[in-house]
Image (cartoon, rainbow, N blue to C red; front, side, top):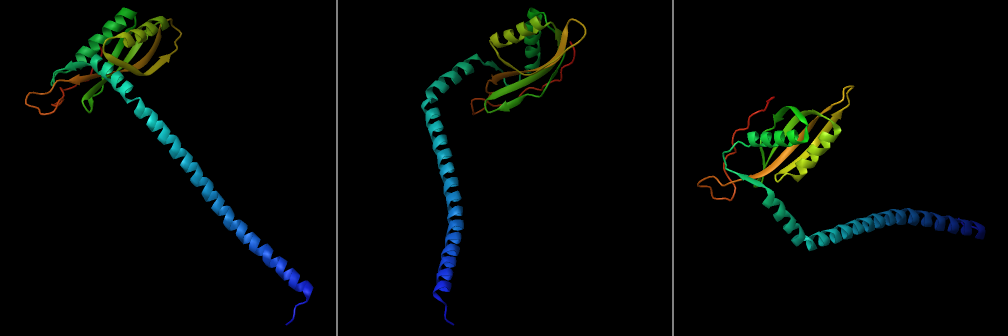
Length: 194
């Protein structure tokens, strides 16, 4: 079978178009893969720069950590800290004219050589009393932090709500312990209304 010059030209153009289309589709997938690899490279480069910057700030962070650790109270290995925390909260609340209506303690938790105790309290008082209480918590020599705070508007003048205060501290090594901080924590009692 013999093709005319026109048919040969059409066949050649069709083949070139078909080859161009297949090449375009294959190249499009390769371009997308290249763009994804480029974006991943940019993310890794950004992460590396951030990590290098943080490593460069290590001495500054170590100094800040040492300052915070110096503020932590240290308790004997078997001492129950709940009573002391409640006395501290009551003192700060009384000085701010905020009433703590009830409180409940969560069990003590340990994070390495640091310990944490949380107290959930219901409170009542004015907005000014609440602000003074929160300010006094931050100024206290212990490491106290309010993580949750709710305020419920009422028709009465005093506001009511709840707050959760976390207290961080360390413990002395138990007698005969080999590591710096060890031993069993004291039993933690659930608090109630005083």
